[in-house]
Image (cartoon, rainbow, N blue to C red; front, side, top):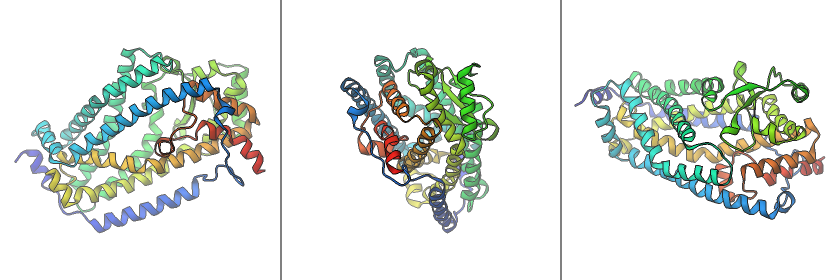
Length: 427
C-alpha cells in the first residue's frame, strides 16, 4: 500500500446524525436569512410589467442579439454539460481515484491534494477549450471584444490559476479536517469554509481583480463631483470611484461594487464613461451605489457563508456513504484520491443551487434598479440606459424561460425597462 493510502486509512466513522442535523439546521438558517434580507418584492405594492421588445429595440437590434445570444447559449450549455459529465465520469467511478493515485504517487497528502486539484481542473479546462475558443471567436466577429488571442490565452491561464488556488484551499480544508477529526470533520471544515468565504469577499478586490484589469482613480472634474454628490445623497461613504481599463478586453458597458470594509470599491468600466452621456452613466453608477448602500456584497457573503456550511455537511454525508466509497475505491474524505469525487459533488451542488442563487441575485438587482431610479429621478433615461447596455452586450431581450431561471443573474432588459412604469402604476 502506498504512503497516501496508508495515510488515508486513518479515517474513522463519520458522525452521520450530527452531519445530517447540521445540514438541516443550515438549510433552515439559510432559508430564514434569505426571507429576512432579500428584497423579494420587485415592485412594492404592485406588479412588474415588462416592456415589449418593440418598445425598446429595433427589429435589427432584436435579430442581431438573438443570433448572437442563441449561439453563445449553445456553446455555454455545451461547455457546462461537458464539464459536468467529465466531473461525474471521474468522480462517481474508480477511474478518478486510480488516476489520482498514479499521479500523486508517494507524495505527502498536503502536496498530493493541490497537485490532484490542478490536474483535474487542467484536464477539465482543456476539454472545454474548443468551446471557449469558439465563443471568443464569435465575440470577435460580433465586435464584443477586441482582445488578441495571446492576451485572451493569458486570461484563461490566470482564471485557471485563481480557480486552482480557491479549489485547492477548499480541498485541503476537507482532507485536513477529515484526517484530524474523522467523526466531526464537517464541523471544522464547514466553519473554515465560512471563514474562507468571508475572507474571499474581503480579499478578492485587491488580490484577484488586479490580475485582469488596471484601476485608476476617476479623473477630477464636474462628472466626478456629481458622482460623489450622488453617493452622498444615497448615504454611501465613497472616497473615490475607480475606473477599470476594460475596453482592452470587451465592448460591454458595465460597473460593479466588490469587497467588504476597507476593500469595498465602486468600479466603472472605462468604455462606459466613453460611450454613455453623463446622465446615463450616472444612472448606472447610482445602481452600483445602491448595492453599496444596501450592503449587498455583505448580504451575499453571509448567504454564501451559511451555504458553505450546508454544502460541507452534505458533502460529508456523500463522501462517507458506502455506495460512493465502493464505486470510487476510496476510503472517505481523508483520502487524497477522493478529490475526483469531491469535485464531482461540488459540481452537482453548483447545478442544483444555481436557480436559487440567481433568484436571489435578480431580486437584489431589481432593488438596486429601484434605488437608482429614485436617486436620479431619471425614469426615461433609465430605460435608455437599459437599452444601451443590452445593445452593447447583445443580450437576448427575451431569453428562454428555463435559461433565465438557471443562469440569469439579472432581470431581463425588458423587465428592467418596464420597472419605471410599474413603479409609477404602484404609487
